[in-house]
Length: 89
Image (cartoon, rainbow, N blue to C red):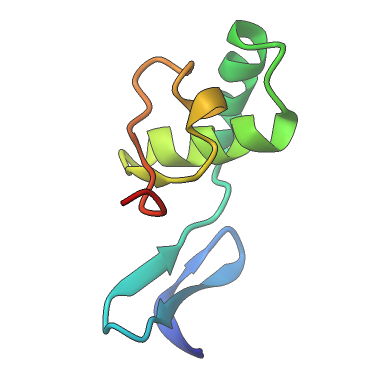
């Protein structure tokens, strides 16, 4: 895989796009201040879910993104979070 640097910084770090073999692009986004605030709310609302799962959910929610995951059982509990599992036929 090849990493391509984008011009805008994110949280003091550079954004990266990863070129995938089928020519789709996956943007890697940072854990922003908005995501940190959303994470705090999610920790209170879903105390039984893992901290890292809640951080991932917070990033997806604040970016209004669909979360690609095989762990739909945990993530589907979070209200408003859109998930997809591309590993299933």
